[in-house]
Amino acid sequence: MTVWLPPVGTIVLLLCGLIVLRWRPKVAIALVVVGMLALWISATPVVAHWELRALEVGVPQTPLTGTGARAIVVLGGGSYIEAPEYGADTVSRETLERVRYAARLYRLTGVPIMLSGGSPLGAHASEAEQMRDVLIQELTTPVTWLESSALDTLDSAVRCEKVLHEEGIKKVLLVTHAWHMRRARAAFEHAGLEVVVAPVGFITAGADPIRQLVPDAQALVLTHRAWHEALSLLWYRMKFLFR
Image 1 (cartoon, rainbow, N blue to C red):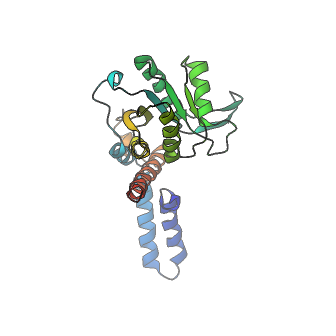
Image 2: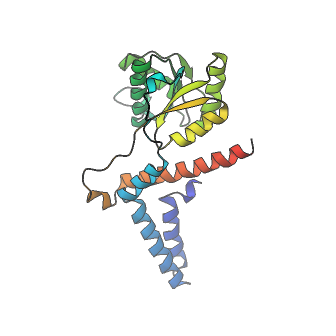
Image 3: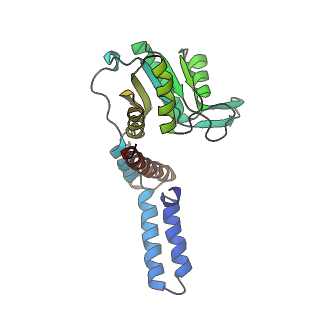
């Protein structure tokens, strides 16, 4: 699937154009033009932000303090492997956003926290362990359950449900990024849990509207993320039809 996501897909178009240039110049020019336009659009902030906003789950309209949820489940969002300033693996910026919000929710609700995330990139410590260290050591927030084996969102849902089922818990506050929440909620509900969404990291309007029209590398990253998330969500929904 990664081959078709920006920027790889657009680069493939450009390479195909160069390959056939000698034999099919008109086709080659068309491929190059389409590839350049696709790359330009993919790297434009206004487009990338629109794509991610289309995936986002909205801010909850009701207070999260009275939902009846009995666990706060926080999904890992990546690692900062062998961070030199810390001398160990630690959470990525996105994961830090999630655990920071989880600490806030704990103070608001008093609901115990469950952390989920394995080591998909081969880190020495799992994402769950990294999140636990930040919560306990830096945010003075206790952690009740640790799930350190899951390698993706669906795996997290299945493993978390198994642990929480033994505790008699069916309803959870789910913490992840707003653009990831649709897929995460679908996975956890399919696993048998009732989900109250607690999203973080919304895409907000840029301060300079002119810069929103100027291509940059960060926008290309966001476009890649949006396409990956949209295709993964589609794959989950198709998969759940046959289970």
